[in-house]
Length: 32
Length: 348
Image (cartoon, rainbow over all chains, first blue to last red; front, side):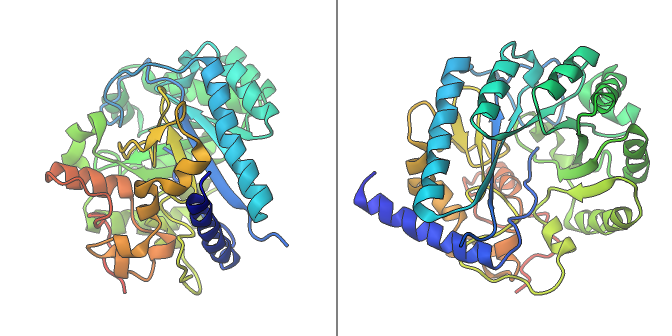
């Protein structure tokens, strides 16, 4: 994985973790 | 310290072959199928991404694999695939029309440790058979009964349209009688063969009426009555509305779910016919980060026509598959526009 992609991944998961801290779950999955 | 688990699901279409030919199906044609060995390698590809996210970002993950088709029971190697995925440590579920689940099949499903089976049921007998073919209703019910008698968790999923939206009460009662764990409702997406039923999709007013009615059943039924529709997150919402940069609920596309089709094509959602790669050819970990389509689904500023300014954006974003289907019907390749059936349009 390139350095650029790794940085992008790090930002993505930082944002995701911050969002998860504000919610009990991501809700029901819309499987169909 | 780890926080809320990251529930991530993989919806995997093992085949597009089916013993039924439903009028509203989002599929429209046959494609080649990956072999069992190719599927196991692809599962390893996804597993590797999950392991990296857990170890490198201290994520607590709750991943699950949901196998479907076409009709998944037409794959002779279905149980070998389920066995492999379970041995990898993942929860497995099945999505089926139920018609091929006899007593012996139900026993094998239980022994395979499948967590639940979602069965499609689209109305009372005449309605269901007008959509799925003559004789299919009783065979589906028999499949559900076989699962329940084996102690396998079964739940019903119904594709809601004008054709069946008036049957909710009777279907909830049927679900109670059958002993399923839940009955869920999803809106019809006019894509694939379902394009032929475009005139039967709900209006905004009908969506508002339907979810209002569903709320009553949620409070007064012996079975769980749920909707997997992103818009239902709004109807169910209590308390403060989370405002986050990253989506935290609603439409799973690009956020907490991915679809793999029978030939390995990866899509944000199966009803969103928008290939972003092939699981046989790409690193899933890299694709999840670098795909422009997946990235735009996570960015509020990329949305337009209402969702981008809606206070429910983080928990809803409408159904991106329905937004895309309507845009395509109007000659546009646009998956970030408004969900035209949203009754909460532009709540800012």
